[in-house]
Image 1: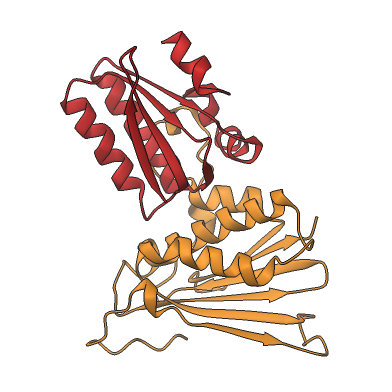
Image 2: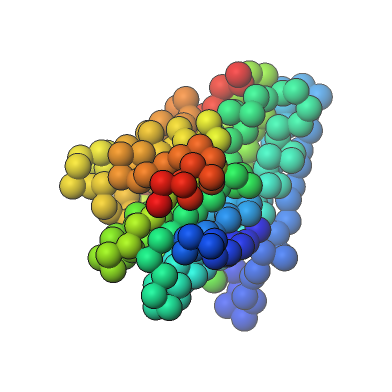
Length: 111
Length: 165
């Protein structure tokens, strides 16, 4: 379980969520994004291709991150949600708050 | 009631102990297997508890991928609520998790040592102004992901039933 961060040539800071995004590790993700914001990163992609499940704390962390990124004039996108994960965003209507693409390439291309 | 832990002992995820009872004849509730765990009030334990329950309750072809996903999220939610909101992350308190494996369903009880709350006061977080809220979605998700939800009168114990599919 953990997060892997990479910087793409187009200037997009990508974080892969490996395992779960839940109450026990959400703060780690928030801190990683905040640190990147402090280093002037403004384009963010969070990749859930290798994610098992997300709880409401994880969803809440994404909401907080999204707000912070927007306040700094940046943009956050999500990708790689499987059918199960996507259902959580639809149930909570958070699919209307985030830009979500199926593949990382689609998100990177549109930035 | 769950007995409080001795104050000098600070529990961690490594101290999790699982108790599994397999019954030849179904018990009064129809359960053939009962799994119970006493979980420290530490959010770092949540993932491990969810994995343990899935490993012992969803073996073989008993359940679908969606069933296991809904079970994982629901147990993680109930456990996080119990640890954070119920026990206030007080390491001297525990959460009791008990799973009953029935013929066509699984029933999970999650009980904390807090004062309890009134679940009827928790609104659905779907209004447009709620979208930007960082919390308040846990109980709503549980209600949407499982087939049946009950609380005890005190409000410190949730019972979730997921039917096999």
